Image (cartoon, rainbow, N blue to C red; front, side, top):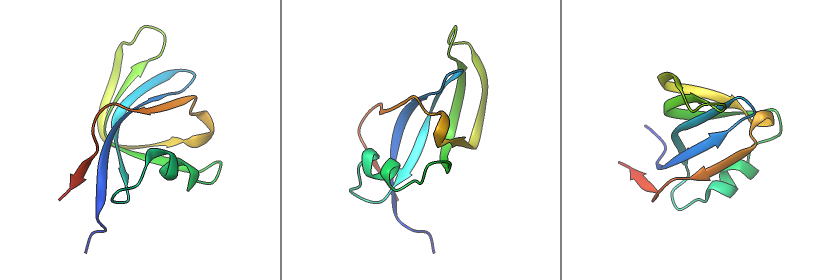
Length: 86
């Protein structure tokens, strides 16, 4: 049985990359709560990710799943409405 999650499309900036993808938060949860629940050094799971160069926005690669070391996140922001993962 899968845990229910809401899907939130986000942009994540690191010193070298811009990642656009989806994070999975508890139903009704906020992105700030999701991040606060992570201990420094943990990795943030992202699905349907597109990784771009921060320097020139060139697409480097796309993947169904990746994790990002939270210590390298400079900025993370939602890009639209939160959707329920049915």
